[in-house]
Every structure is written in C-alpha cells, then in structure tokens.
Image (cartoon, rainbow, N blue to C red):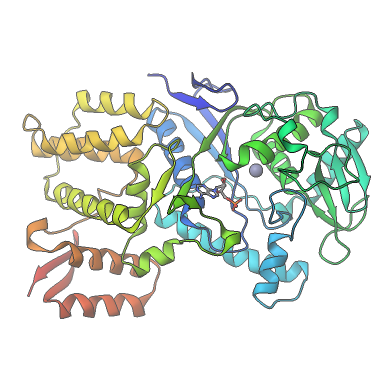
Amino acid sequence: MDITLYNTQTRTKEVFRPLIKGEAFMYHCGPTVYDYAHIGNLRSYVFADILRRTCEYNGYTVYQVINITDVGHLVSDGDDGEDKMTKALKREGKPLTVEAMLEVANFYYHAFVDDITSLNVELPEAFPKASEHIDGDIEIIQRLEKGGHTYVIQDGVYFDISTFPAYGKLGNISLASQKDGARVLVNPEKRNPADFAVWKFDGKLGWESPWGKGFPGWHIECSVMSRKFLGQPFDIHTGGIDHIAVHHNNEIAQSEAAYGSPLATYWMHNEFITLNAGKMAKSSGGFITLGSLRDQFVSPLTYRYWLLSGHYRSPMNFTIDAIRGAQNALIRLMGQVSALPVGGTASQAYIERFRAYINDDLDTPRGLALVWDVTKDGNVSDADKRATILDMDRVLGLKLDTVQHVPEEAVPSEITALVEAREEARAHKDWVKADALRQEIEARGFTLSDTKEGIKVQAK
Ligand code: AMP
Ligand code: ZN
C-alpha cells in the first residue's frame, strides 16, 4: 500500500516515492539548545517519529537526522537580535566563550534527548551538532562566493537572493510582503530585504574564517549537515510551519545555488501548539516543558497520546482540561490492554484499515479511534484484540505492551496518575521524587509491588 504525504512544496498530497527503493532518508530541523524544549517544539519530533514509524511499518529502512543547533540561531530567526546561545550564557552567568557555550549547549542537548526518549521517540541515526561543522559551512560559503551568490557587509557575509530566481518557492512566499521589513528588519546595507547572513561577524564569540571571526548563519548549518549525512537530494525534510517562509527557503536557496540539485523531494511541516490560542515561544519566557507537565502528574506518554489525537497539520490549543482528558483515555486504554490475554493474532481487517489511515498523510486521530473500535468489537477475541492493538502501537508508540495496570475499577484514576508519575521519576532516576510519590500513594490507601509483569497497585 502506498504512503501518501502532504508536500508543502507542491501543496498537494503525493504518493511517497523514495530516491532509493525501500529506504527513506529524512532530515528534521532540530532544537536550538539554549533552553529546555517546550511542548510545542516537541510536537515536531513526535511528528517526525510518527513519520519514521509509518515508513518502518511499511517495510522501509529509515535514516533520520535531527541536527542540534548549538551556535548561530538569532532570537529573531533572521539576522537581527541577540544570538540565542549568547542569551543563554548571560542568563546562566557564564563567560562569553565558545567553551562555555558548548557546555551550556551540551546540557540542553542531553535534556532534549531525555525528553524525546520519554516521549518514546525512536532516536535518529545521527544528531549532528552545528559547532562541529564549521569547516563544512566555510566550504559551502566559498562555493557560493565563487558562484557570485554572496557579498560582504559590515556585520557579515550575505546571500543575495536575486541570484536565485526561484527564491521563496516553498510555500509560495511573497517577497513583496517582506519589503517593509515585516520579516527581517531592514539593514540598509543589504541588497534585498530578504537577503540573509551565511556568516555573522563576532570579534569575541566565534571561529576564524576567510571573511573574519564569527559564526555561521543558522540556515547554512542545515544545508551542510543534511548534505553530509543524507546526500543531496534526500527524501523528506521536516520542521514546524514557522520554518517555511524563512529558514527552509533559505536552506533551499543556499543548497541549490551551491550544488545545482534539489535539496529534498518532500517538505513536510507540523502546525503549532498554542497556549490559550497564542504562540508558545521559548524566547518569550512563558512556555510549558515536559518537566512542568510532570509536576502536574502528566506523563510524557499522556502528552504523546494527546498529540496523536490531533492531525499534525492541525493547530492544537493546549489546555489542562484537554490533557486531563487524554490522561483518562490513556489510563483506560492501558488498563484495558493490560487485562487482555496474550497469544492472539492481529486481525488483518483492522490492520489494513489502520494502515490505510496512517498511510493517508499520517492520520493518527483516525488510527487512535480505530484502536478504541477494536477494544469494543465483540467479534474479535480478547487475545486477538491485544495482538491487533499492539501491532498498531508499533506506529502510535504508546508503549501499550509494557504497561501492567490492575483493572481500572479497582484503582481510581488519580492513583494511576501517581503511579505513572512515579514510573517516570524512576525512569529519570529521580529517586527522591519516586519515593515521595510512593508515600503519597500509600497515604491514599494503596500499596505498590514490583512483579515480573510490572508494577501492581492494590487497595490496602
Ligand atoms: P527551535 O528550537 O526554535 O529551532 O524549534 C524546534 C522545532 O519546534 C522547529 O521545528 C519549530 O518549527 C518547532 N516549533 C516551534 N514552536 C512550536 C510550536 N508552538 N508548536 C509546534 N512546533 C513548534
Ligand atoms: Zn533547519
């Protein structure tokens, strides 16, 4: 069965035709590691994971890259404003040195890997770091320079978009709307308002280059790392919708101008998670992390379940009521699945329907609804239900095979939520929190015991 994906480039759903039969090469714009990722950022990687798992479910071998931006991303996403890593150094009272910058970046890189691991995201084959590809950046900039695509002004080396007539093709971006500085504050030295820096000068924080000391532009990093790990072109490039107008069009301009071949065949973008219908932004301070969800006893898998209940191309507004709804649903589902006997075989009729949904541009809401249909279907034996649901969970990734809960009626949902939170704390080796949660569970009249099948909860 074909996989159909919505391609931002053609603005249609297209059958996925990989460059190499049976293999899927994909690049996902990664986090800027100057702070914890917020739950909006994490949607991008759950979406990438569903894409990966869908390809694997259909028999593909997947090669995935998530880059780590540890240098070069300015607060504005353009060429103005403070560098995000510099901002982090100041916030944390560290010296403005490359060494300190990499130390801060390393901390948030590990926090990011912990986050996506707890969301049950399969780890990519590579997490290349921007700071380790400075030579590659210099090489492509020299190539662009030779081709007449760049010019040097006071604050850096810029790409001249008039030398790349297809500029803005992704998402059909109107350059007229950028003339008044709507996108990038107009720097009078720039030849065109949408020209962007490929190298920014910085006398203190940075690396030597043929043009002067500084650091690479944010966009150039992705052109270099995607080509190095996946070749050019590769199959699928993803990111949040905010990346279409500037970042991805800039990546395309650089890579295609330098090497004369397309950068990627399919461009896919996830919609935003909003908070009270407003944008969630790291730089504005008010944002929710997996840590803040845990503090409310909401597990990362609950967040994953909630994400999958919406389509990746639909905006979702985060509210505590919505997440509580997802929590109850997931707890019920876990309870039901764990009560089903092992030893059955998956129902092919259901699997075919599931595959049709998921292959239709990753329609997880319909996939999840089908899981619930299976639980209610009196014509499927209990053992077959379990096998069918666990097969679907290869894509959904809700870890339904590892959870053992006693039947839901016996334990109230707030206790199950505490048990889940304790499991999370244990997974993060937070023994103090895990102990506190055990005491809380016991104080509420329940006992916990570790069994071969997992944690058992019983009323005292
Ligand atoms: P950044 O660390 O800012 O480079 O962002 C990492 C990823 O998160 C990118 O793919 C962004 O497009 C995406 N992103 C940022 N904010 C949101 C949001 N509120 N909802 C969904 N995705 C987002
Ligand atoms: Zn990128």
